[in-house]
Each structure stands twice: as structure tokens, then as C-alpha cells.
Amino acid sequence: MEEKPALGEWEPSDLDFVSTSNFSLQCSIGSHTTNAKFEWVDYRPAVFRKLQEFGEIDNDDYTDSIRGHETLKFLVSPEKATSLCLQHDDRFIIKILSKSEMKVLLEILPKYYHHLKKYRRSLLPKFYGLYVVKPQGGKKVRFVVVGNILRSDISIHKKFNLGISPQGRLVSKAGAEEDLNVAFHLHAAVRHLLLRQIKHDCSFLKEVGVTEYSLLLGMHVCSAPFEAVFQGHYTTTHKEGSDDTEKKTSDGPDATQCDPAEDMTTDDNSGSSCPIEFASEIGIRMTARVVNTQRKEGNLASLCHPRKQSPNNVILYLGIVNILQGHSKLKHVEHVFRSLQSDSPVILAVNPKVYSTHFEEFLGKFFPESEAEKIMKEL
Image 1 (cartoon, rainbow, N blue to C red):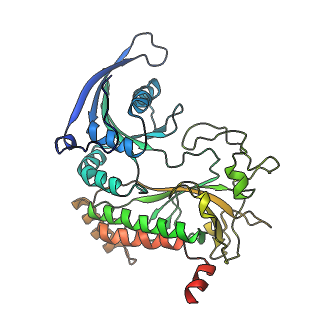
Image 2: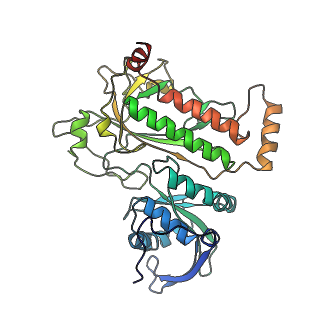
Image 3: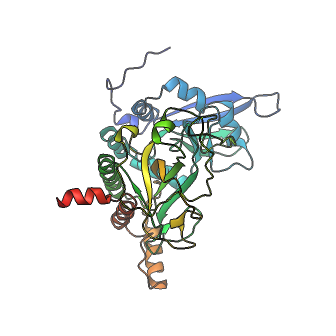
């Protein structure tokens, strides 16, 4: 087997950013005894191999996972979804791309590569491979392999995909336009690192002309102290994003099971600092306290129904998603049309600079300074 250079010993050349690799695969799908043939095109393989190294992913293991039976069966499924979290390797998600999304990724790839090289804590999606596969007698399928933001050994009780509506309001995954009156208090140092990285990532997205991205946020509600959670007292493992239905976990030997439908916010706005040592990476296993900024019945601020002595310690997993929407001439026309049809300011299809500014402002409201931090600044 060819010996691969270690991380840092080589850099992709200009040619690597335009190269492709073609080959064929044969695999039996379903109950068929004969092997199906797949024509496989690997785009920019050397560049993505370097991106895999950034994520400490072994290329051989990655290749075995991505070219396996599960992936090929998904790609030929007549009723396939737009994405698949691999059951046998939940580090990766297979995401089907449109022709325009693939074009955007190829266009931004050089700057994306250098951004991730500079900012290893980036919250941008971690792209590990870009492919076009054509089953024999079938249609071409374009897909990208992306890191699973919500991969966790603890249950993700709540999940939000937070973006900005045409009128500049927060939009939940369900499509409801509401002011999500809840904030997450982080350790001061973690908050600083998070907001600084969001600023760097938004600057990149603005530079490459991307809009309509959002923040994917997964939340584990703690029914025991953080220390007990991180000691690993769990009965099962949950692979967020997969079809695995085993989601029962416990925060400790005597902890009660948390109901995801219960409220976990508090009206206490004092916001004691969370221990920084429990936040291993920005966006991964971040400890926080949920604080209501406003109580309103029916509002997402309550995150369902209030109850007495609700747990408000949470562990967050988050990252920026949907970054393959370029700002085309069509989107400019869309912005003009929406502006004429509405009295409210329309920003969804506006230029990337304005979108980036609004996005940063929204996220800043979700991770505010605690009252303790504000007092310390005034002293």
C-alpha cells in the first residue's frame, strides 16, 4: 500500500483543486445475487484527504465507510431521502446535492480549505469528500460527505435549525416565525471563543458570497450535575441523525429520565458561570445554563410547558449548516420582488454582507453576557 505523507508534510497544489478521479465499483444491493456496477467520480480527492487529516480521520477507514454497502444502497433507493447518517459509522452524513449546490462547493473550495486550515475550531460544516455516482442503468447522484455535528454519546433531547426569515426574524426548523426568547449562558472564556469564531466564519461566508445559512443546535438537558454526565453513566448510545430509536440515557445511576417535552429554562437571569473544563471544543459538548429572557405563553421561549424546579443545565452541540446557497442574480431579483410586496424589511435574499451582519446579531442574543460578567466589567 502506498505510504501517505503525515499531516503538515504536503499541501494541495493548484492542480489538486481542479482534479478528479474516476473508477468503478461492484456491489450486491438488496436481495439481488448479481453485483451492481457503479461509475464513481471523486472530485478534488487530494484536497479532501487533507481536510480529513484536519479532522484526524484516517483515509482508509473513511474510504471503507463511504464506499460501503450502506452508502450504495442509499444512493440507488427509489425513495431516498436527501441525507443519511451512516449507521455503521455515525461520524459521517451523506448529503445529496443539487447541481447548483455542487457548483457552489467547487467554487468556494480553495478559500474554504484555507479557512479551515487557519481556523481549526471553525463552526462551518466539515466537508470530507465530493462525489458523483452513477449506478448502471440509473441516474447520476451528486453527494457530499459531511461531518455529523450532533454526533454524541448522550441523547439530544431538543434540536433547532435556526435561520433568518425574509423579515429578519428567527425561524425554527418547523418553520414557525417567532422570537425565541431564550438565552444560553456560557463560561465567559468559552463565550468569547464562540462569538469570535462565529465572526470569522461569517466573514468567510460573506467573502465567498453565500447566504441563507443557519445554525443547527442540539441540546441535551441534564437531570444531574455536569460532573455526573461527563463521567459516562449511560445505559445506551444515541446516534443523532440516524434512524436508531434507542434514545434512553441516564445522567447518573440514580438520575430520572428527562422528558424532552418538559421545559428546562429558568427565570433566574444571574447566570452563574459554567465550568470551562467541560467544554472540550467550540460547538461540541458545551456546558450552558438556559435562561428565559421573556415569558410568553405559546412562545418558543418556554420550550414547551413550564414546571417547578426545572433543570436548566444543558449540553450544547452546534454548527453552521446550509452554506451552499450562493447569491446569484436570481436571488437579487427575488429580493427586489419581495421588497415590493412587503412593507417589512426583506433580508433573506439580500446580499451576503447584510445577511452575515444579521446572522451575527441574532446569535449574539442567544449567547449573552451573564449578569455577573456585566457587573465585573462595571467594577
